[in-house]
Image (cartoon, rainbow, N blue to C red; front, side, top):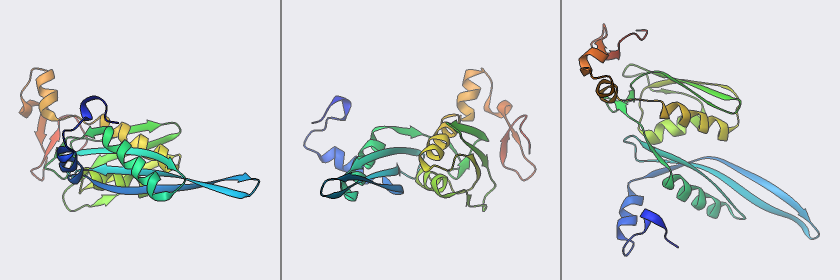
Length: 191
């Protein structure tokens, strides 16, 4: 049953929207319920989807079969997407810290050629966002659900220099200074 703004006419625009996203299975969990006839298994899937251009979302789905759990998780991920501003379409604009529960992540922008230096759950998120150069550290909880949620918390804190300049009634050049290697970095941050 279609509800809200996601209602589509004939299904064509939904297919076009679905085709632009790539999904990645981060974690699958199997649980067993012991019943009279034996064990009844259930599966939970954690999926990250993204368009590789700055939009990303994650979802969680549960079902008796693995493919159904993955399908539910993918649909949930497409429903709550986050737009992340990227610098030069390859890295973040500034460093940020995210928390969820006892999980904490630190994200640092990196120069070109660094690659994605991050653990499994975070790596999936960065690949789906389209980040090519980043250094990330996960501390505390190693639960993939907490790590992904903490990573999204850190990505929500990302701001575009244009938006900051507009909010502060300044020019972008006042907000962004020049680094020694020629790339831009925010004024006041460590080089």
